[in-house]
View 1 (spheres, rainbow, N blue to C red):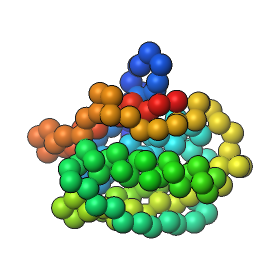
View 2: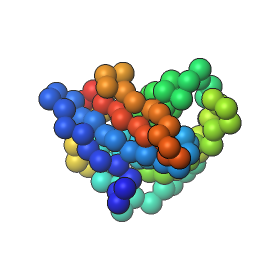
View 3: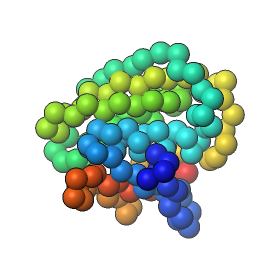
Length: 137
């Protein structure tokens, strides 16, 4: 995959597909994609690090929980996450994210309102993790 994600065409919403060698890398790429759809992250310099822990019953639930947590933190703290590293142990993830002040960034796409379960995919295919997420915009 030459880029960290690919945009998936959808009638009313916006979707992405990404992958990674590990579940953590794939979820990190999905998180990057979610914020890169809203803001141009190419020239953003991270200003802080935020860490939190999550547990989930499945890789799919972990994906949704991480993205939803980041979206909530973004909305309540006016943050744009630029670099998300997910370090999973079993189905427990410790997330470190560098954040930039979203007030300083111009929106380049519609704001993501929610992570949906529509066409959601988080599965291991061979030696890679493949993710598809449709965002409610």
